[in-house]
Length: 156
Image (cartoon, rainbow, N blue to C red; front, top):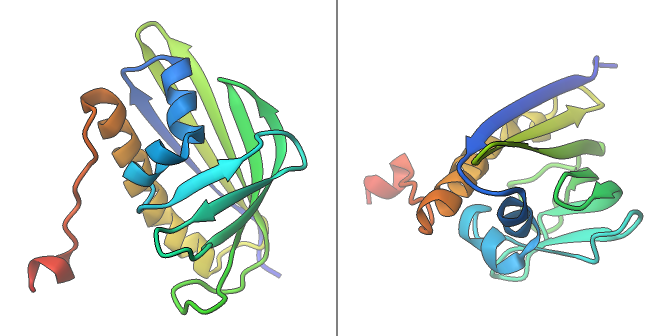
């Protein structure tokens, strides 16, 4: 069995904890930086978080383990490969968002604990989280979504 693997991402965003929390929990905002995915939940321990793409596909399953409004969210994370070959049926992992106010800036620390070690999910989220967090920062600081043109899109 593989050793657990942890990735930690930190981004400094010129915003308030309230606005950052809103961007993490408001489906209309998550669609703008999370690959078009809306995030819906009752935001209470034990409750699911439903990630839904604009075509109705639910790429991830998640359950809130701990939550402190405007400060911290801990949830499980499992890819849902049903009807989509992009995702693989890897074991559950854990994601923690931590918000720390630093004057007019917030530090957002995202920790993804891959309890089963290196998997397809590990490889995909390692790059994906960087794009998501960059999009979140851009949205909060400029009010505009980040446009990332993929190499295959540029060639078309």
